[in-house]
Structures are given as C-alpha cells and as structure tokens.
Amino acid sequence: MLPTLLVTFRESLEASLVVVIILSYLIKTGRGRYSKVVFQGVTYGIAASLAVALLFSRFAGGLEGVTEAIFEGSTMLVASLLISSLLIWAMKHSNTSHRIKKDVDVALDKRQEIGLLLLAFVAVFREGVETVLFLAAVSFSGGLSLFGGLLGMTSAVAVGYLFFVTSGKLNLKIFFFVTGIMLLLFSAGLFASFVHEFQEAGVISVLVQEAWNTEHILSERGFAGSIMKSLLGYNANPSVLEVVAYLSYIAFVGFVYYKVNPAKNIAALVKR
Image (cartoon, rainbow, N blue to C red; front, side, top):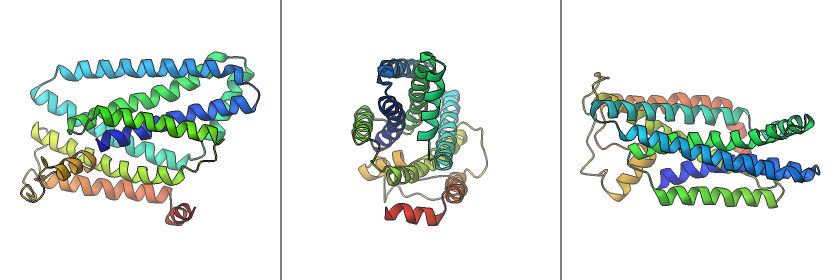
C-alpha cells in the first residue's frame, strides 16, 4: 500500500497545488469569476487521465510471456527515469508560483479563457499520466493498492485545501524534500526491477548469477519483505547486475540531486 500511497499523494498534491495557486491568484486579483473555467479544466484533465489509464490497462492485459516481461521492464525503466528527472527538475525550479501566476496573466490579458482552461487541464492531465505510469510500475512489482491510491489522492486534496485557506503560508519544502528521497529509493528499486525483467526475458544475459539469497532471513512473501519489495525494490535473491544497477543508480542520481540541492541548503531547510 505504501508505494501507491506515496506516488498518488505526491502526484495529486502537485496538481492540487497548481490549481490552488491559480484559484488564489484569481481571487486576490479580483478575477474570481474565472474560477469555473479552472474547474472545467480540472474536470477534463481527470477524465483524460482516466481514459489513458483504461487504454494502458487494456494494452498491458493482452501481453504474455517474453513480451510481457519486456513491456513490464520497459515500463519500470521509463518510470524510474521519469521520477528522477522530475525530482531534479523540481529542485531546480522550486519557485513555480511566480511562473504560474504569469501564465494566468498572459491568458487573461489576451481574453482567452481557453488558455486558463488549458493551464488547469495540463497541470492535472500531466500528473495523471505520470501517476498511471508510476502505478503500472508499482503493480508489476506487486505493491498496487486501491485503498492506498484513494487515501493518497484524498489526503493530497485535503492538504491542497489547507494550503488554500492559509493563503499559501503552509511550508511544504521539508515534505517535498523527504518524499523526494523516498521516491528516489523507490525509483532505484524500479531500475533494478527493470534489469530483473530483462534478464528473465533473456534480453540481458550478463552478470545473471545470484549475488546472495536472504529468503530464509527476510522473505519477499512476508509482511516486512513485501513492503520493502514494493517500496524499495527489495529482492531476496538478486542477480549481480541487479545489485550493481541499484547501487549505481542511487550513486549517480543521488550525486546529481546533491549538486542541485547542496548540503548547506538542506541544513537550512531542516532548521525551518
């Protein structure tokens, strides 16, 4: 449940915050009458995301054997790379509020309500498509939970509303930093799982020998083991290449993450 909760909460919160920033700015600038246009964009974005989820499930459900393993591995690879790129991009562009408000001004100065609608639509649809891809990768690793997904989205909407009623004074920087680290570890697990699937399909045939076997100590079928498998990509008997891929991914992406957000900035963040 935890991976589903984490992914849906993070993605839904990002979409919620964009919508909240737009609505707050419209109200503060005396243009609250355009709020209905924003809600229309949100509705269309949700509907389009559900359509993508349906098409994706229909396509994935028709695969089997080697083709299925390659498809699952490819989905995990794309999801892991996308998570990392989004985390790094978010650290570089942490002040998105100003950009969103500027986009609202541009749309309304040109008297183009469609521009405002598209702004809300794209914010929701983008996060929706990313959520579909991430949850597909979670389902392949056995960690998908409908309850976790609903809880994550509901919690995100609640936090977004709280951010709205407090006029944006709620400090979410520590939250995004902590969840960013958790998503980084989750992404590394997906990357290692991609290697596992491709080795099973015979696409990758190097370093396939077993690195270790801890099934008797911490089984993947047990409570703790299943949580670690779905959240961190734990494998009781990984191949040597899986271990190398996991550690290399954390080392490389962690280094880039550190360079984007230096230790002195992290220390200042935690003290807030």
